[in-house]
Image (cartoon, rainbow, N blue to C red):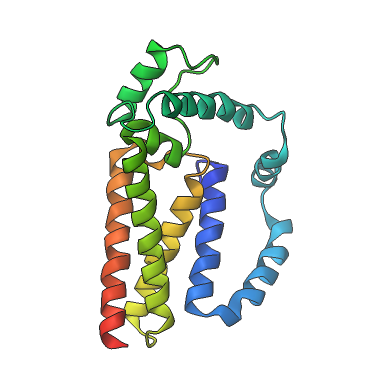
Amino acid sequence: GMTYCRAAWIGIACAMVVMIFLWKPKLLPLFFALCLLAAPFLPASIWNRILTIFDSSDSSTNSRFPLFKAGLEVITRRPLSGAGLGTAAVQRYVKLLNFYHARTPFVHSHNIYLQVWAEMGVLGFVGFAGSALWGVKRAAHAVRHCADGAVRTITCAACAALCGALVCGLADYLWNYPRVMCIFWFVFAVALGGAKLCEETA
């Protein structure tokens, strides 16, 4: 939250909504009401940063488009195999074929879905997206038929965290830092483990 990353804020908001929806859906109207009441108390710096999401002249927003375009160019040229594992492989490929023409250096595609496809090709993309969505679906289904308790709450939290990360990934590449990738898959494992325990106790 303190990085002022708008994608992370939207991801956190999504995770909170999913958490409440899975845990106690009746609390959703109260949650939205509290959010509206809290909005006027946000610091000006945070409120102004939120407003830039809809500002087409914002430099941070505009910088995304050349990055997205470069990622799409890699996918267009190598849709099946990708450029190779790791951001460095994509960086080399983008530089070699001159796909990127902006002032800031190309680090990654700023979108987890584009970057995974650009690195690993279509099979890697399908494997990642399919696994993530399957994990979310399985955890969400399990908690709907599970008795209240620690297992249900933890599974709800893990499922909500995955949803938040996947939404955040639309405008950022979360795995630029390997430690974040490890945490993502750890939470994925917690969601699946929790789902299994929920199914056993249902």
